Amino acid sequence: MPPMPPMGPGGRKPGGPHGARLTMEKPKDAKNTLKKLIGYIGRNRYLFFALIGVMLIITLLNLAAPSIQQIAIDCITLTKKKTSVDFGALGKTLIGLGTVYLLSSVFTYMQGIFSAKLSQYTVKTMRKDLFSSLVRLPIKYLDTHSHGDIMSRMTNDVENISTTISQSIGSLISGVLTIVGTVVIMLLYSPLLTLISLSTVFLTIFVSGVLTKYMKKYFIKQQVLLGEINGEVEEMVVGYRTVVSYGKEQDAVDKFEKMSNNLKKCGIKDQIFGGVMGPCMNLISNFGFILIAAFGGWFAIKGFITVGTIQAFILYSKQFSRPINEIANQFANIQTAIAGAERIFEVMDADKETDEGKADFEVENVKGDIDFKHIDFSYVPEKQVLKDLDLEVKAGQKIAIVGATGSGKTTIVNLLTRFYPVDSGEITIDGQSIYDIPKDKLRRSIAIVLQDTVLFKDTIEENIRYGRENATLDEIKAAAKFANADEFIERLSEGYDTVLAEGGSNLSQGQRQLLSIARAVLADPKILILDEATSSVDTRTEMHIQSAMVALMKNRTSLIIAHRLSTIRDADKIVVIDGGRVAEQGSHEELIAAKGCYYRLYQTQFSGVKT
Ligand SMILES: Nc1ncnc2c1ncn2[C@@H]1O[C@H](COP(=O)(O)OP(=O)(O)OP(=O)(O)O)[C@@H](O)[C@H]1O
Image (tube, rainbow, N blue to C red):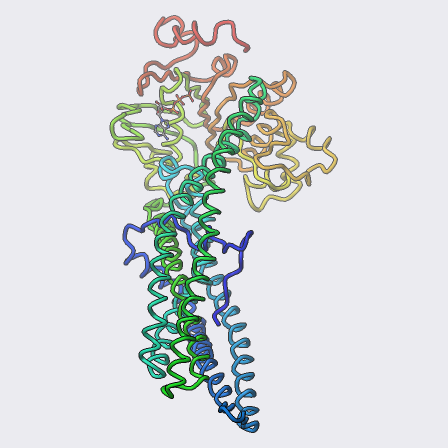
């Protein structure tokens, strides 16, 4: 017998109730996707053929067993007067039967090994390729796909493929082989009895089809409700502080309770329909056995067949009906897996960041002159963000970029780092177009300190080392000292070995910023991009951050998205962005005197704020 997939809770197979993912996601281009998927499976073709071979052997053994039983039974001759048994033949036949069962178990075990290996090797390669594609995707791709969507491709879709390869392919092949083999053998025994047992099989297919239709309805509803509940929980965890601070705990509980109630009702209906399936199928198949026994008995009395044949027929009809449901379920599983594979290949086939940089550019020799010439840019076609923007920055200058929210300040730095390509115009560093500079070299020339510091779940030492991979611990400590981060790090019980929580959430916002400054110090680039934090941190940390930033900016070209008046005043040049253009530029005094954009911005945003 082919191995049954492991059962989930309540006797259900993983992948959805009733063993099938009844959502029946339809792939858009199944043929192409299947081709690519087979390409991945084909990388382990020896395993695949070994699997097919083993399955063929198992099926043949399973097909042989009932016939051997028939021979064993026919060793016993029953007449009205006496019962005679050919013990020699019976013994040999039973040994043969035992051997068949033993071999079947051994090969089934081997099938488990081969299919597990085939699925794991295949998805490991896919996972690796998918991740490599993911890190080379342009940022634009991430803008248009939710994190949840990308995560789900990496986890759920890959998992679906793995389950399908390890379970569905095997079941499908063995199912088809078993059905064909069984029908052929049954026909050879008795075409008439074959027809009688097939009639119940058609009844099985019909009844299970009707029941599945209802189950599918409730199953899909249940999945939708489950998705909503998951979303609700996620929102609650992410927005926990907001929920608590507005005292909305009870509202959240009430809403959850309502959703949970709906899920309960739907779940009960789903389970009830699911529960009907088993007894119905049993009833029909037992009815089939009665038919075979009755007609078989009659045929045996008439001398058309032997008693052993009746037994063989009962076993064959059992073997026959089992794979039918299985195959129907596997089709649904395979379809879902192909739809998942399609989503995976879509990421793999998405246009990757290209790197047409060709100039002979050395990071060490960068001076830091930056020039934006006639830049037009839009994230989405209908909405132009930068319009004919011109901005010149001399090496070593400190430029404060100011402007109303949404005016395009961050966009300017997004273009300099080539996170997005310009629509038209040219950006140069030391006179060279940034599109002629290899991307990695360009980005190594620039360090970015953002308000939302991204820290990884690793030690403080490794988080700072992110700035320069080959830095020694002493260099890391020196950078931390320079960034005024050393003091708080040394106070932590594990010091530089302290492992940060996800996103560095076990540090204060100010401390996270100091670490990101330390990273930039270690990277030691000629060009700096600073996005000043708008949120307030305690005065002491604030002073540390400010002085570290000032020290860091020395002798570097710095573009600061500035929010503090002191930074703006200290800048060599203030650039005011308005409506996607440089509206004004000059020193604080000049711009105030001009009474233009900056003056108005100053009046509304900076006068009276903390310097
Ligand atoms: N990834 C994106 N996709 C589409 N539109 C975007 C994207 N990022 C920014 N925008 C839009 O581009 C415009 C400029 O955004 P940008 O982030 O450059 O503004 P900003 O001046 O830095 O604002 P803030 O001071 O609030 O950070 C805004 O209208 C914004 O809605």
